[in-house]
Length: 146
Image (cartoon, rainbow, N blue to C red; front, side):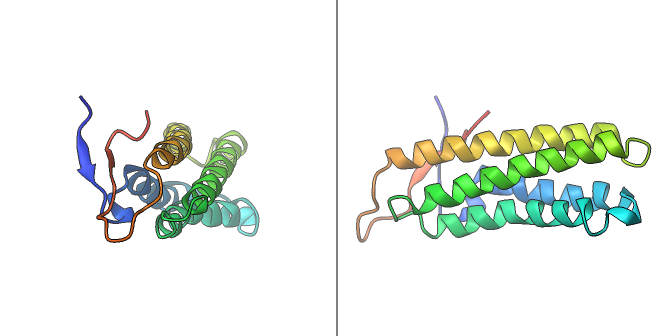
């Protein structure tokens, strides 16, 4: 049986936690190792896309009562996550002598999971229906995606 956990804020969402940690890992382990000539291209793109994923999840959560509000932001977060996977693949393939290939591969897997979690959360959230006035936050499965 799946465990249920009350979701009181976006910070309780496993996909948010994973996206935030992955962003920190990219900033710590990948960006400092990319060449200076990538400052305005690959580095800038990775900075923007990795920061966007948790931001979009948080922003979307605030619109969870709108029929399509949360869905749109989760779709956008999934798109940014996919974009991050491409940028990490480029970093790994173009600069394999500068970045740790295993770290890139782990982060690519993490962002793949984040994309699937965004999709699965959107599907699951739609099943809860619209929020009724005066009701408490939703409880959703803590196992949002695998």
